[in-house]
Image (spheres, rainbow, N blue to C red):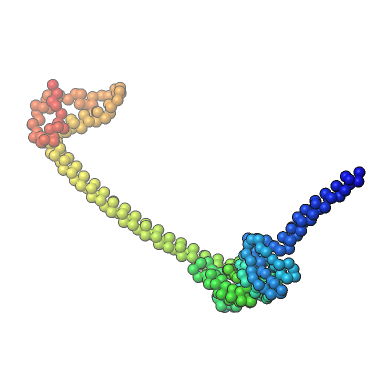
Length: 328
């Protein structure tokens, strides 16, 4: 009984020692090392003095209070300002506008930021005041129509942004170690009291432009009508000339036939009556008419006597085709 108890007592310290060693190792790693993330940079302070900076990764360190490690998030931040971010600002021509700006910055110089700012809130408070001051100074150098205008070519917003950036970025970098990447205009508007007047003026400008466009349209329409009328007259003139030419040719050709008919009036009357009869009895028609009225008196006419008493006409090449063949 006593022998077994002594063996158990001898085995307990071995597990305890191993567990103690493991705990001690973890404790020493936690004390003498630290981890820096990809979005961070670490400032090393040894005995109250800044001795260096560390980037992402696992690093060794001395325990407190010998060495202190302060980590900062170095990602870019978009800051709109805490004071006066949307307040009225007077332009060069003494008109009020409401301008809101923003700044994109990141912590660049960790040592300067640590010594000057102490905290991010303090640095942003200075940046906000600086943005407000510079905004009023820069906007006051430009006219109202250079910021709000229907013509993009007359606006100088990019120039205003560059002017504000050149005054804010170097000052904030020198004082707090903040690197300003961009200063831009977030919003721009007019106070309610002058908004109606601006709207009315813009409406009149649009109406003037519309009336000018309408006048141009009327002038172009008149030009198109004039060209169309000229073309119409030209086409009518050409058509009339062509019609007169055709009429003259027809009259000349008809004169040849009339000469033949003048030599033989009875033949001409015969052909006219025959043509009338063809038009009247064009389809299947039953007519009961006397033969004593024209053109049906043709049925009583002696064609042989007509040929015997009338002289033989002189028929030209064209009239020969039109003359009827003798009736046998």
